[in-house]
Image 1 (cartoon, helix red, strand yellow):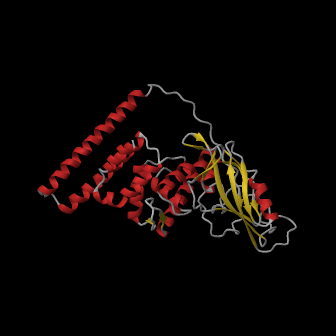
Image 2 (cartoon, each protein chain N blue to C red):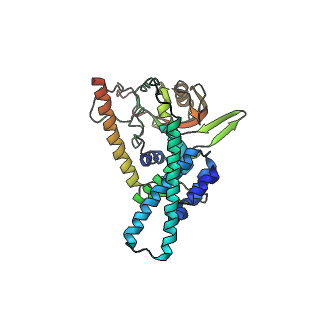
Image 3 (cartoon, chains in turn green, yellow):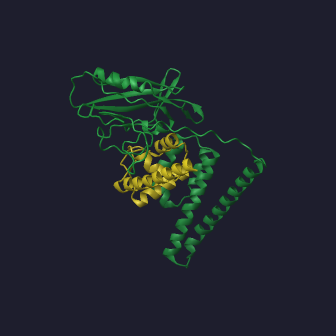
Amino acid sequence: MRTLIRWAARLYPATWRNRYAAEFDALLDDISPSLGDLFDVLADVLRVRAITSVDACLVSGPVFPMSVRLPVVVSLTAHGLIMVLLLLAVWGHVTTMPLHVVAPLPPPTPDPPPQVTDARVFPNALTLYSSLPLKIPAQGGTLPLYVADGVGINFLSLPDIGAVYRQGNAEWRVWPGQALESFIVRRVLPEYPRGTSARGVVSVFVEYLITRDGSAKVLRTSGPPPFAGAAQSAIERWIYRPLEYENRPCEVLSRVEVRFDSEFANSGISR
Amino acid sequence: MQDPTILILASLADGDKHGYAIMEDIQVFAGIRLGPGTLYGAICRLEERGWIRAVKSESRRQPYRITAEGSKHLREQLALWGQVVRTGNRRTREA
């Protein structure tokens, strides 16, 4: 299948191949391509070819010299073949479908509990992910806010994202924390440790594993003991829906930074 | 939200990634697997619009970085979708 897709990629225009062929090849080495991927590439070839044909017509006008006739004929033939393949695929797909499909709707996914960390602790964090909104909605509303005073969670940018580590028979995939947000079922926010004399900002970096049953197990922490302990005990109470990779259960390794800021602890912002 | 360009911008918002890492990241956070043609079609359009740029690399795996214009566009789109989601949620509760 990989060879077929490489063959299909040769149908891209030369400008596209010069720019993307090497990295496209590398991508094909990384994935396990399917028949769907072949049609996906052929469809994109068709799209790119259509755009570049229009561009060429606009640039060169209606006159076609002999030197461009052959490539145009080859290109049109290739497009014809692609269309035939697509029609055959659609026909095969449609004829194998049963006439009446009655399937129960999946149960609605419960929304994760709305929780926010203290936005003042990470003032420049992006607010891309919905289950950990760092800002109160601009229009107000009834969203209940549970704010941990002086404590913020930041999803780190992981340099080894996508890497796979093997520990005996186990296989751990590295995914960033924000990518896991749609799987979170329960999040417990760390509390600022009481009775500590630390002043200012304390950062704790936590590496944790989401096991096959969705529970979180802290592997490593870095930071002063009372703060590291607070972060660990909270994260170990996080629960995710069991994760899958290519339809197989998998264990996922991730890392977050938990930041404690004494300036905002007990400032009365919560609830 | 299945527009591959927005998914790619969202993936690059937390750091540079090459094609395979983008594909895997999107599969995890959105549950959508982009095909290689769709992925590189979208990467090509994003580069043309100046929303991402290739980062110098010695490897065959070419990493990409979101530009300031790309971040701005992403924020605008997310704000728009946030409004749609909030309105939809409110109306389905009222119905």
